[in-house]
Image (cartoon, rainbow, N blue to C red; front, side, top):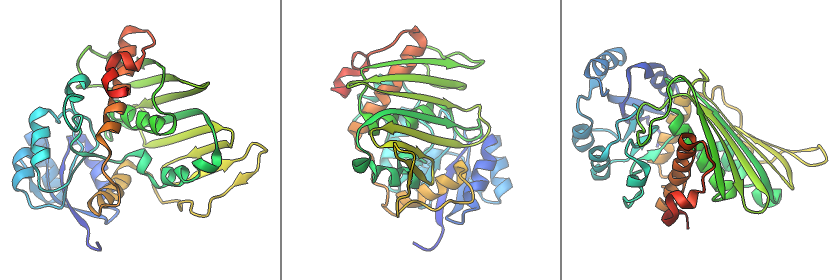
Length: 320
């Protein structure tokens, strides 16, 4: 596919720079744009000199585009999920559904009919790292750090991305302890408007551990994974993996991804949108989505209770 992918974007007003970075790649072109706030949608359409989409559900059903990208926060409710499932074209999202997780887990696709982008585990750096895991050996400790600005994504979405990475490396933990920081506290059974910082500690069977820090207060996009184990140390970012052996020497894989000019959220999203449309990135199994959402909910509950939580007690039917 040589021509830019035609994208319908549904965004918040302050996400103008996110969209600009995605268009700079020339991988995508803007077909139409809209916003939950009609005035913001009009301003965005004027800014990019493109047609305004005034109704996302109608646009998904009738619009002329290759793929839709939902970047606006707190819009994927039950009616919107039904519209996404009925859409004849691919739909991607950088934000999560707003209904309680236990309600989402009752749906066949666990409330995630849209493809989540940019997923860290699908990044060039992580793809290269996963190819090393058999040679790396036993994984004993994982640390994931994901920070962004509020114009890029929400910490709840970063927590999902981080937990997806940890789950892929270590599976389901025995225990999760989490805390939330920031000027706005979490509210029971409310997933809208989440901002601030999550810090999570996870204990796994067999003397393995993981930790997560994610925040929308970091200003810029930065995703990194540290893996420690019998093979030494892996440091993974969106583009590359660096392997240091236990004796201190470095092993450079032949297929390591080349550095890119920028790892901004917009540029990465454009890359993933095109890969999704071309079928390069396979859809995530509903079982995996359900487990990752259940782990996120366990962390959220721990933030509220101040206690360590057993994920199987939160959503045992999904995790067993």
